[in-house]
Length: 174
Ligand SMILES: [Zn+2]
Image (cartoon, rainbow, N blue to C red; front, side):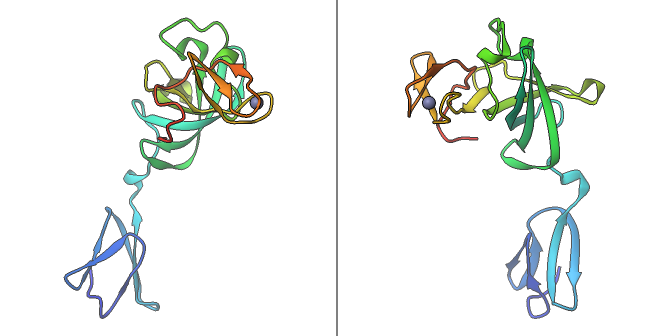
């Protein structure tokens, strides 16, 4: 892309054998005035959800039959832009879930899979062991909920509540 005597590597670039190389496929911007070279991701490299994507998001609203999830990550990477998905109560778990309030509450951090984009809505599912809540907060005091038996209990006030948890709940992996 250039030699380091001429250009200073910037975001998305690195120096190898005196030449500036790009870490990712994208559009190269040469800033001749400041002698900088940057790489901007090409449109097809944007990290957006598609059917089959595993996403992480926060529950923005919860009703008896549906939870609305604001997606923040697709796979391991931050999402490009702003996307919202919906989990229907029938897609919470392989086991019957009568009421969404037994599975998710507002502010929960949830890992889910995109199962459809029908009617331009991202439909999400948390069926499966590795899907569901990965962090949740006490609805009484806002404390962090930790695993206790098959449910969750508040670290601070001891209040016990239900969630559809992922198998790695609270382990720090998003
Ligand atoms: Zn509490």
